Image 1 (cartoon, each protein chain N blue to C red):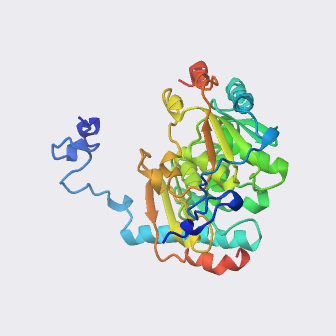
Image 2 (tube, each protein chain N blue to C red):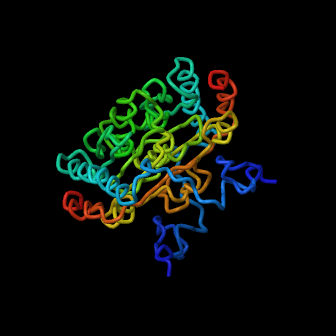
Image 3 (spheres, rainbow over the protein chains, first blue to last red):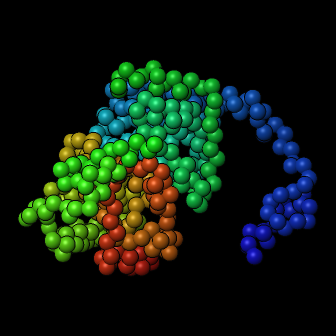
Length: 192
Length: 192
């Protein structure tokens, strides 16, 4: 028997009596003003993603690396805002997300970033995806698809292939209409 | 039609006339003294892997991180020999392979490590696997399986799940009887 089936729901008082997972037929409790409206949550996502996209442009402009940016956020505040530093640091691992995770860990003086979110201008590659996993970041929101990066010759590998192979929970959100795809089109002249 | 099927073998003069991939029914050309004997190649692998294993012990001993070591070799010479620095650097990305790639790139003053091999005391996680890919290292040889690491509570994720999804050619070798599995047993007292 699957042991998960024996686990009771965490809001047992609200439960239906079933011990099969966390499902309940009753309505979820209402959290009042603590729960942001859908529109406010979208605006928040666009605000932080916009910073990551600006970082991507900035990184190309100053010759630090390829057009990728990442921002780490904690309690609605930007902890670090970074871009790809592969060329500047002569370090093939210095992708935007990895650079941001390193800098945030230093700044917050902690290895675990479990209370943080990361905004990436583009879908993370498997290396960055692994770094996000090891840093225990709780949420990843990204703009462009890896496919868009691939269309002008950058790596289009994603973590998809191993994400389902027992990867722990990480909330992942693709943010549309952010202008992130245009980054590649606008900067390709520097790389092709 | 699969375009790969039209690709001729790179040693066309030796070919069998088939244009289906690189296979040939003729014996491969003999490279004389340049080709090491199987025994010599095995001894060489064990020599470099031993250094990676010693690094793993060293890293635990001085409290720098978890029991993992990695060595980068070029032209039969050790370029860098590193261990996991996650605790010392407060950096969740500072796995042994990533640290070695960063240091080797700095030392050789080049982003591409295409002329290098990496020896890792344990099978690489997806993050390190990605870093190896981006550094263009040509060969990865490792000792312990990720399963052995998992048996005492460390991550047992590997790059297997996405390796087959279009991952470029990288020679990967599991080296047996190296003593790499024992690293976890011998050091677990520091972590459990």
